[in-house]
Length: 115
Length: 116
Image (cartoon, rainbow over all chains, first blue to last red; front, side, top):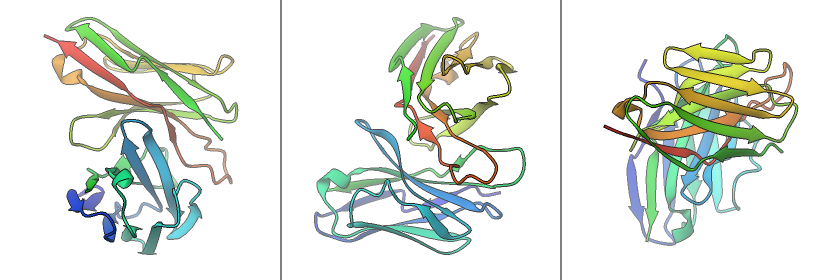
């Protein structure tokens, strides 16, 4: 089990550019979550999917943020255009609905810096 | 929605001492309370969790207690070691069957430093 895989690990981009973060969940997991971590706000849920369908996107800050899950093994979080206040660590996590293990498995995160 | 408060924000202990981190939650429907450990440069990792039908759970040097009436839960680490140094997060969720509230709401985290 390779765990949740995120890419890239680090991203530095200029304000106004488009940024795409990628996530591969654990095979068999049917829930996928995108979180943003900052010192000020901690871990914030942005959006989550169940069986590739977005269930709750109320945490997405604004229309500049969008997320997709075209299949069970891949999801993207896109920011267009990016702004310096988007600088944060973005985590993807997945879990399986059935079974007694309710915990999430997090990826290693993408550290985004917008200059 | 759910709101989780976590205290303290930083905690420094001597190796071998115990450490206690406390959290309160606002939604009485929450019934699942996990704790995560985050080491530098890594994602949070689940270390222990508890469901609302249980008051206490232990796993070696780690224990979690839950008081549903008061809506608070705590993480206890005994015989702390330098490798316990990390940021610890509590979280809460409602796992009721048929509900869509499988999202976790996290506390702001506690930076634990264990001094050798």
